[in-house]
Length: 620
Ligand code: X8Z
Ligand code: ZN
Image 1 (cartoon, rainbow, N blue to C red):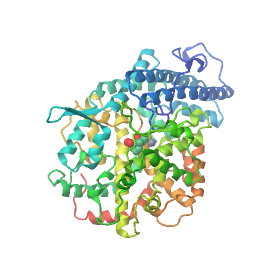
Image 2: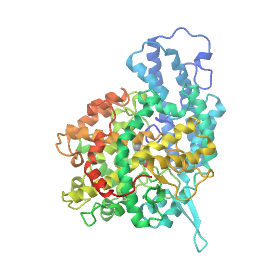
Image 3: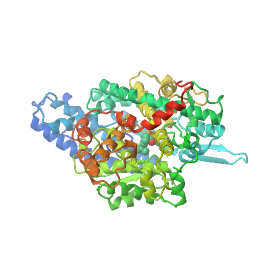
Image 4: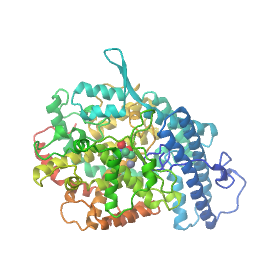
């Protein structure tokens, strides 16, 4: 379910079925308005009514969709998959028809809300389906199947005693995070990447059918539909992403150079050669997207105060609920409201033992009426504590806009939604953690600062190229620039180009490595996370200013500050009602996304990295 931007697979908003009452006469397989009998000239007044009806229909449909998706994601079976696919079919049918019907109002002078609603209707879904009933059913079934394959993915192998043991993504990720043994890491990496080849033919068909659907509603392909959701022409949006990448690339390059040199010390120059991409399985994460798990190998000044929050969580027997409560406390300290009681009753915090579920974290408002939940498989680690804040950021967006019409129940753009919780985690300073009892005293000195910044950069800066490249790959796939026969090759070309990482063993077109990353089989657009990594620093700076903080950005924590809370709440309440530059302006006083605050935040580390890298052969 992707309503939430966090994870609805198909849609940016959950959806579902009550088509029968849906749109005028046309919903559900009947011919589009343009093909029907000639209609009287449309009026602005009709457009307004149309927009109101669409919002009401979508709220009902999306609630059904989210309900089916929640059940499926927390209990993967053939039945729950089929059930979700059915509902998705209905939503897809509704969307296709409603968008076509909205064309009647093209060229009319509409009031701002009606115009925005119609625009959002056209771009708010991450998938479009053809109006052909069979094809629509097929694309919905494929979508459910793809996510199911991912959710059920396991790596099984026989041990020496002949017994077969299987490990899921959580267990394999633990190996990637903790092991420092090259071959053991390789085994876990290769094992997980064996789940996705069966997805390949499904994905290929998914692309064909999705593109057909996109064309019917006026987009050249699904990638262009996605790129059109940023209040900019799609080409200009693409340029924006490149502009932002150019702002941060030099910092990424410095980090990459340092990390590679340190890895070479541990694994040997032969395995990690200078001037070459880093093998993708050595960076502490299945996709090499965030590198904080290898902090112990990277620690600039060993022997300083411990920054090991995971150890503290374990030592203090933090259970998942207590971790979520700690997250909630940050938000309420800003003066935001507590989570509703139903959140605690309905969320999935831990992995059920008796069934397959989608463990990939997500946040939901199932009924679009403050029915907030998170779905996670929480472990007592710092990584999961950060993810909890991320998910709660989504929930706090939901809770402040749920009274708005359905199409306004979304972020200013999807990157905003992803950035809220992350902006809050930037306030999780050692001082805050100390007060929460999760760190001992971390004296303020240069060494501790560089250690801390290294840890942050391994998470935040390392992610940037990965956040960008997933959709570079999909945009090209949807546009037909990357043919199915080149899916895997194109993937590794981009991973090398942007991240400077390489596949650790030879890959071929028998593999389908993009499918081993959740958002590809789940069809969740990914550029949002790239934008969020940048926006969160802009938000953090704005919140710090609202709080009256004076001092370097990396020292600021807005914990407990009601002024910062007010500033945040004002933006959350806007939902998607205004083009995003206005929401950004309300929060930061700027109308452009800008990576300067990110660069500013990492100022101290940057200088230190450049010193370390002197004489190194950087780049790849
Ligand atoms: O998918 C997520 C969230 C849910 S919206 C857990 N994230 C991306 C990922 O895991 O790949 C957050 C960071 C990037
Ligand atoms: Zn998210």
